[in-house]
Length: 452
Image 1 (tube, one colour):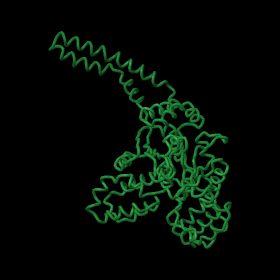
Image 2 (image 1 turned 45 degrees about the vertical axis):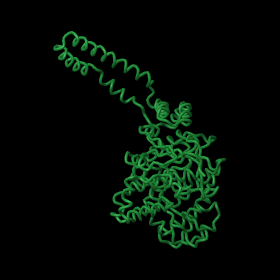
Image 3 (image 1 turned 180 degrees about the vertical axis):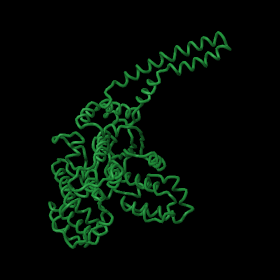
Image 4 (image 1 turned 120 degrees about the vertical axis):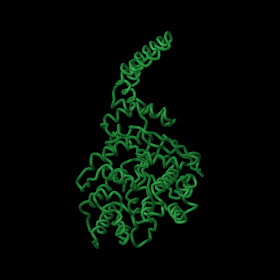
């Protein structure tokens, strides 16, 4: 039996999927970086907000090897920046639980490009989405890489894996027979892979090897209902039905997106986004089961939220929130974030034990007071007092006049209502609205009973 961890212990983050990291990067900035540039500020700010929100909502963020080695945000910022954004000293655990194909991150990189068939004479077709930040086409490079011999990467030492992989990808991109030493953006990639490899070697926890046998998409699709908008098309449209079955059989997210792109425009009947959301949710259900944790999605649109509702899983709990916590955390200086998290430790603990809306509000207020340092509860009480001191006498006077003179009272009520509107402190009412609950913008999938 494999009993799932409680929500507050550890969780995968949907937004850290490697393809999602690339999409968020491109959404925030159209600027390309070179090998010497830091990521654009807008990208770093979003990454900071997502990273800190995940850090608050769970004690350990589960990061599969591909999210480090091919995650545009993780890879291009590097371990030192991640540590800084999380306000961790060099003596503290980073709070990231790295899981991989092997217990050593260099071996994970080697296995990624060799593919599942280690005996193959050519490399696998692996798309490094993070190359797009340099202005390169990951799909074209992956296609060229898949025709290259696997022996250089098979035979090199673990220490040389980042350099040799980068050289092979550069040769593929340039159409060269060999590249002895990577240069330019490919040398930068090798350096960034090496930085994460060294960081995980220094961490006492290192990289935890996963059990690949536990990843079961068939089980996940059995758990997660097909959205009604998709199911309605399956019986009456054979081409659509075959497309859906083909997508259900795919295990990799990049392969699934390629399959969606390859389908004729009319086959999917405008349901590509629903198929993407349904497949991705099932994919993360399977990952969460494999890694014994729950999963979060932090930066979702209203349409995506509806997609999740439409494909709700049985045996799990889905909590959905809206608000501004991610934006608030993204703007905090690191020292303020460290103080905020320390001050909110009781609220974080209550949320971890019982993830409900009331506790999410308490956690959000505990964090946000560091950006808005006014005593929010006291401010709300004072504002309500001003409002009621204006409203109550006006209505009492109007009621008394109406009681003594029914006809005249009608006009008195009208005049009184106008007077109330003119004398009510509208600015205070607006401020009260701004002090409403600040919930967390996310949805959280918490595993149900034990998995067989």
